[in-house]
Picture 1 (cartoon, helix red, strand yellow):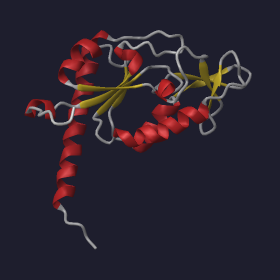
Picture 2: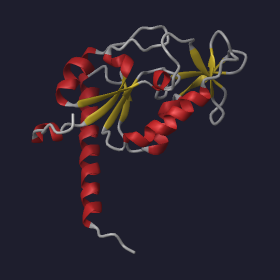
Picture 3: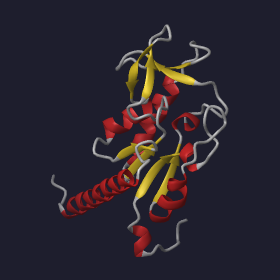
Length: 193
């Protein structure tokens, strides 16, 4: 809230954007969640968390028809599993273009593995006949990586071990330090005509 003072410790807390389903919110296509206790019970004590859900925030609602990625890299579409005429690509793409601009102050991102919007590298891709072509990134994740290539991005599967969690947090803190040092340098450089 505006007007409230923050302690130096709070100002130094990293901001990590997290898929809302991983925070225990019932936002998945089937109305469920995929709460990860380490994120909600441990990480939240040390970092500020910014919930996001590309599909819900794009206006797709809960519950909603399941979608999957269809096509090749560069021409992927998020189409309905049961109704291939359902195409939610424009909604997710529009949301992604807006949201990535709001990630300037984010120090890390934890997304839902395998999701058509959030998956890192494990989202199944299909041909129009339903045959699996392989795996890749979800539509929102592609937009994030294109806009913020150095941003630490992971998923809940990659954070299964303590070693992976520590490594991710080290990347988050390095990214935050680099971002802050760049802001200081820019603040000291006078505007040139």
